[in-house]
Image (cartoon, rainbow, N blue to C red; front, side):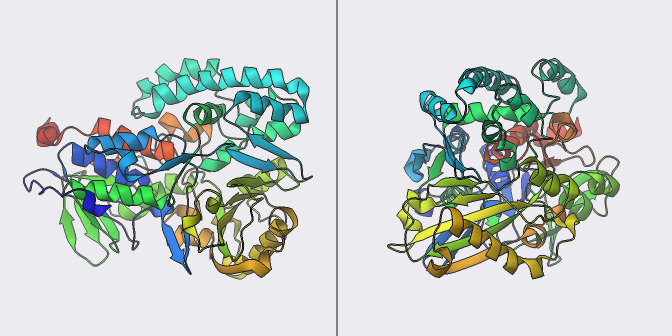
Length: 511
């Protein structure tokens, strides 16, 4: 892919932008800044780009570490277009339909289809009386999408006036209520309430706390579909890196930023972990918000995001992720499968509020080889399974618990969708909340940054332009509009709108 373009020579006189973190948010921000004429340097502590979308390769298997559900491909199209290229020339996206299969604890299965008639048929299997509610829910989801996503997701939200302008719609559309409560207005059957309310978990939210604005995800899936990148999500990461390098800009791996340097309240550069200082005109931090403010700005006076505020914020749940390859193929296992446990509300309360590692759990199982055999040796399957778990405030000793928890997950998968699993495994690795804290530098090992609840969304979320440091911008899951691939890419669009063209940068700083 790197050979598709000839990198341009960077303009050494152009203002220099440093991007901290090579996750989707940082990479997208780098592409957009490069298109505006900035010299861009991206620093990342890992040995490959991607952040949460890192790719593991071992024993002939390829494992996408993080996001596997792609719902807004036009956001990638935009980035390629900014570089005069076409996404389809580099990446093959395959629509996945049904979107996912939900297996309830009693063995019953619900499939979410792009085709509304097929979804109605699925609903009728559980509660024929709820089919009419589904039609009303679709209209409500579309109305929320138009108000919350179309109008707000790609707009800066750092001014109170923006909040006041959006408030009437939030009240009118029930945004002050939670997702589960909103869904319950349309479905009487508990299984259907679960099937249409679990989506906030994809972005680190509790359906019983997250604003009902997240019901927009149902509409987003239907208008843009659910896609998979052939070769894995890592292909999109490599594609973005090739865009950045094609602009003549630089990605520095195995290079951790230790501190954002400031002078007179303005960002002036960064100090690397090896002690080197790199000067710049502006900084975009794609690092998690707690790490950005409490660690990278530890020597800078802050009046808004103080250490106390960072500590008191509510963080998302974490994840236990088990990657494994099998010597056989499980043809009956779908690409995206959700294996629910016996509890829903109670389990979520234990994860988010009680912060205890319960005996029961629910699972998301990803089998990409259902559509892409290139991710495993011939005749084999590649998987990952994740379980939402509390972040590290739970006090769980994951060094001791990882093995036993893996056994419980394996037992559950064998009993439900992967018979005889343990004797078929030929490659595996684990990721626990400790990895989110130590490898991905996430406060409390939270997998998605700040929890997306009402008073940590929109204006209440950390702004994309820092209120504490001039010349510092924020992209990624912890800032507006939130976690999930579409939101993270949209955060880079917000930064794009806030940063002037490179030719106007220095004049803007004198104003």
